[in-house]
Amino acid sequence: MVQIDTNTTLERFRRFLINSTCKSFIPESYLKDPEVFPEKEGNMGSIYVEAMDKVTLKKIRDITFVNAKGILGIIYVSKSGNTKLKWRQIKGQIGRVTGEASANSLVNLILSKVLTKEHAENMMKFKDSDGQAKKSVMEEKTEL
Image 1 (cartoon, rainbow, N blue to C red):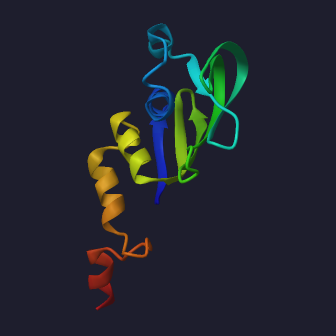
Image 2: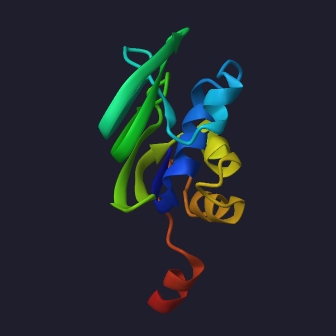
């Protein structure tokens, strides 16, 4: 698992949610609408959208699509439970994503441009075989 702590737009995080959960079956009109978000309940992953105004549109498979305005936060837990992320509004459409992500979720975070490939690679570089953060080369040199 990789610790995530970065700022991103609401739209990029929405794209991450879609890529991670319903890309193969989301109606095209929902995909193009920046106010439509997937929600999901249950033991096999969940998505909760906290918004000032939220209306249920349609349920397809295990995903309920909602039209949401004034989004304050989103909580996402993957099916496996290995990824747990929160997006919290900072100002307007900008928010902070925090939590931990699996390798599969890292790919989806990169595809949706929440993270750059370089940023994700740098986060992975400083992990040892036990998943513990290693010191950077600069930190090691300053200790000598």
